[in-house]
Length: 189
Image (cartoon, rainbow, N blue to C red; front, side, top):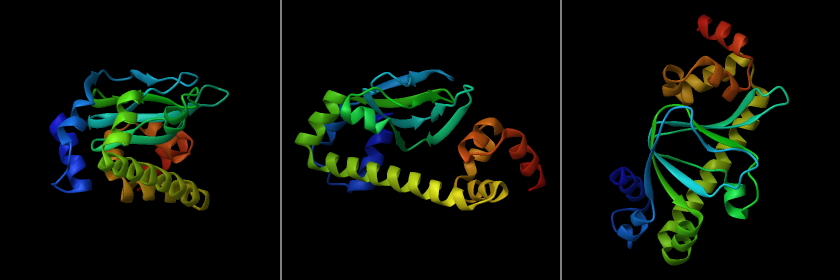
Protein backbone atom coordinates (compact mmCIF):
# COMPACT_ATOMS: atom_id res chain seq x y z
CA UNK A 1 0.00 0.00 0.00
CA UNK A 2 2.79 2.43 0.85
CA UNK A 3 4.18 1.96 -2.66
CA UNK A 4 0.89 3.29 -4.12
CA UNK A 5 1.09 6.38 -1.94
CA UNK A 6 4.74 6.86 -2.85
CA UNK A 7 3.92 6.71 -6.58
CA UNK A 8 1.02 9.13 -6.05
CA UNK A 9 3.32 11.63 -4.33
CA UNK A 10 6.02 11.23 -6.98
CA UNK A 11 3.42 11.88 -9.70
CA UNK A 12 2.57 15.18 -8.00
CA UNK A 13 6.05 16.25 -6.91
CA UNK A 14 8.53 14.50 -9.18
CA UNK A 15 11.21 11.92 -8.37
CA UNK A 16 13.36 14.12 -6.15
CA UNK A 17 11.13 14.15 -3.09
CA UNK A 18 13.07 14.94 0.07
CA UNK A 19 12.02 13.14 3.23
CA UNK A 20 9.87 10.57 1.39
CA UNK A 21 10.62 7.89 3.96
CA UNK A 22 9.65 10.25 6.79
CA UNK A 23 6.37 11.13 5.07
CA UNK A 24 5.50 7.49 4.40
CA UNK A 25 6.33 6.56 8.00
CA UNK A 26 3.52 8.86 9.23
CA UNK A 27 0.84 6.87 7.37
CA UNK A 28 -0.75 3.83 8.95
CA UNK A 29 -2.04 1.12 6.58
CA UNK A 30 -5.53 -0.06 7.50
CA UNK A 31 -7.96 -2.52 5.96
CA UNK A 32 -11.65 -1.82 6.41
CA UNK A 33 -14.63 -4.00 5.54
CA UNK A 34 -17.54 -2.87 3.37
CA UNK A 35 -20.14 -0.55 4.98
CA UNK A 36 -17.92 0.52 7.88
CA UNK A 37 -17.99 4.13 9.10
CA UNK A 38 -14.66 5.93 9.23
CA UNK A 39 -16.41 9.06 10.50
CA UNK A 40 -19.87 9.88 11.78
CA UNK A 41 -21.24 13.40 11.81
CA UNK A 42 -20.92 15.10 15.21
CA UNK A 43 -17.59 13.33 15.85
CA UNK A 44 -14.36 15.25 15.24
CA UNK A 45 -12.50 14.13 12.14
CA UNK A 46 -9.04 13.03 13.24
CA UNK A 47 -7.64 11.56 10.01
CA UNK A 48 -7.02 12.01 6.32
CA UNK A 49 -7.19 8.86 4.19
CA UNK A 50 -5.44 7.94 0.97
CA UNK A 51 -7.42 5.29 -0.91
CA UNK A 52 -5.05 2.58 -2.10
CA UNK A 53 -7.91 0.20 -2.92
CA UNK A 54 -11.67 0.47 -2.60
CA UNK A 55 -14.28 3.18 -2.50
CA UNK A 56 -15.46 5.68 0.13
CA UNK A 57 -18.66 7.71 0.30
CA UNK A 58 -18.85 11.16 1.91
CA UNK A 59 -22.46 12.03 2.73
CA UNK A 60 -25.03 13.63 5.02
CA UNK A 61 -28.46 12.46 6.12
CA UNK A 62 -31.60 14.46 5.40
CA UNK A 63 -34.57 14.67 7.79
CA UNK A 64 -35.88 11.28 6.60
CA UNK A 65 -32.41 9.71 7.05
CA UNK A 66 -31.84 9.47 3.29
CA UNK A 67 -28.22 9.84 2.22
CA UNK A 68 -27.10 12.78 0.12
CA UNK A 69 -23.66 12.06 -1.28
CA UNK A 70 -21.16 14.88 -1.65
CA UNK A 71 -18.26 12.82 -2.90
CA UNK A 72 -17.12 9.35 -3.86
CA UNK A 73 -13.41 8.67 -3.37
CA UNK A 74 -11.79 5.81 -5.26
CA UNK A 75 -8.22 4.56 -5.72
CA UNK A 76 -5.46 7.16 -5.89
CA UNK A 77 -7.50 9.85 -4.17
CA UNK A 78 -7.76 11.46 -0.76
CA UNK A 79 -10.71 11.61 1.61
CA UNK A 80 -11.48 13.50 4.79
CA UNK A 81 -13.91 15.98 6.29
CA UNK A 82 -11.40 18.79 5.93
CA UNK A 83 -13.26 21.48 7.89
CA UNK A 84 -13.54 19.28 10.97
CA UNK A 85 -10.03 17.90 10.48
CA UNK A 86 -8.55 21.39 10.39
CA UNK A 87 -10.57 22.86 13.25
CA UNK A 88 -11.12 19.86 15.53
CA UNK A 89 -14.83 20.72 15.62
CA UNK A 90 -17.50 18.05 15.13
CA UNK A 91 -17.90 16.83 11.55
CA UNK A 92 -21.02 17.67 9.56
CA UNK A 93 -20.54 14.71 7.20
CA UNK A 94 -20.14 10.94 7.39
CA UNK A 95 -17.50 8.84 5.66
CA UNK A 96 -18.31 5.19 4.96
CA UNK A 97 -16.68 2.39 2.99
CA UNK A 98 -18.67 1.23 -0.04
CA UNK A 99 -16.32 -1.64 -0.79
CA UNK A 100 -13.64 -3.38 1.26
CA UNK A 101 -10.85 -0.82 1.44
CA UNK A 102 -7.12 -0.62 1.84
CA UNK A 103 -6.36 2.84 3.15
CA UNK A 104 -3.38 4.79 4.36
CA UNK A 105 -4.33 7.00 7.28
CA UNK A 106 -2.50 9.95 8.74
CA UNK A 107 -3.71 11.46 11.99
CA UNK A 108 -3.86 15.16 12.87
CA UNK A 109 -0.55 15.18 14.78
CA UNK A 110 1.34 13.41 11.97
CA UNK A 111 -0.28 15.62 9.38
CA UNK A 112 0.62 18.80 11.27
CA UNK A 113 4.20 17.61 11.67
CA UNK A 114 4.48 16.93 7.93
CA UNK A 115 3.04 20.35 7.08
CA UNK A 116 5.61 22.04 9.32
CA UNK A 117 8.70 20.01 8.43
CA UNK A 118 8.30 18.81 4.83
CA UNK A 119 7.66 21.63 2.34
CA UNK A 120 6.59 19.22 -0.41
CA UNK A 121 3.86 17.79 1.81
CA UNK A 122 2.42 21.28 2.19
CA UNK A 123 2.33 21.51 -1.62
CA UNK A 124 0.47 18.19 -1.92
CA UNK A 125 -2.03 19.32 0.73
CA UNK A 126 -2.72 22.53 -1.18
CA UNK A 127 -3.24 20.50 -4.36
CA UNK A 128 -5.71 18.25 -2.50
CA UNK A 129 -7.61 21.27 -1.16
CA UNK A 130 -7.71 22.97 -4.55
CA UNK A 131 -8.87 19.81 -6.32
CA UNK A 132 -11.55 19.15 -3.70
CA UNK A 133 -12.82 22.71 -3.87
CA UNK A 134 -12.76 22.83 -7.67
CA UNK A 135 -14.58 19.48 -7.91
CA UNK A 136 -17.27 20.56 -5.45
CA UNK A 137 -17.86 23.94 -7.07
CA UNK A 138 -17.88 22.43 -10.55
CA UNK A 139 -20.40 19.76 -9.56
CA UNK A 140 -22.68 22.25 -7.82
CA UNK A 141 -22.59 24.78 -10.64
CA UNK A 142 -22.93 22.16 -13.34
CA UNK A 143 -25.68 20.16 -11.66
CA UNK A 144 -27.82 23.23 -11.08
CA UNK A 145 -28.00 23.72 -14.84
CA UNK A 146 -28.31 20.07 -15.91
CA UNK A 147 -31.39 17.91 -16.21
CA UNK A 148 -31.42 14.49 -14.56
CA UNK A 149 -30.55 12.82 -17.87
CA UNK A 150 -27.69 15.26 -18.46
CA UNK A 151 -26.31 14.52 -14.98
CA UNK A 152 -26.21 10.81 -15.79
CA UNK A 153 -24.48 11.59 -19.07
CA UNK A 154 -22.01 13.79 -17.17
CA UNK A 155 -21.23 10.87 -14.84
CA UNK A 156 -20.77 8.49 -17.80
CA UNK A 157 -18.34 10.93 -19.39
CA UNK A 158 -16.43 12.17 -16.34
CA UNK A 159 -16.47 9.22 -13.93
CA UNK A 160 -17.36 6.21 -16.09
CA UNK A 161 -15.95 3.56 -13.76
CA UNK A 162 -18.52 4.47 -11.12
CA UNK A 163 -21.41 3.44 -13.38
CA UNK A 164 -20.39 -0.23 -13.36
CA UNK A 165 -18.96 -0.24 -9.88
CA UNK A 166 -21.62 1.29 -7.63
CA UNK A 167 -25.31 0.64 -6.94
CA UNK A 168 -27.89 2.87 -8.61
CA UNK A 169 -29.12 4.19 -5.25
CA UNK A 170 -25.67 5.57 -4.42
CA UNK A 171 -25.15 7.03 -7.90
CA UNK A 172 -28.58 8.69 -7.73
CA UNK A 173 -27.64 10.23 -4.37
CA UNK A 174 -24.35 11.50 -5.81
CA UNK A 175 -26.16 13.06 -8.79
CA UNK A 176 -29.00 14.50 -6.71
CA UNK A 177 -31.64 12.44 -8.56
CA UNK A 178 -34.46 10.27 -7.23
CA UNK A 179 -33.32 6.62 -7.43
CA UNK A 180 -36.39 5.57 -9.46
CA UNK A 181 -35.84 8.40 -11.94
CA UNK A 182 -32.17 7.43 -12.16
CA UNK A 183 -33.01 3.78 -12.94
CA UNK A 184 -35.60 4.75 -15.53
CA UNK A 185 -33.32 7.22 -17.33
CA UNK A 186 -30.28 4.93 -17.14
CA UNK A 187 -32.23 2.17 -18.91
CA UNK A 188 -32.86 4.55 -21.83
CA UNK A 189 -29.17 5.19 -22.44
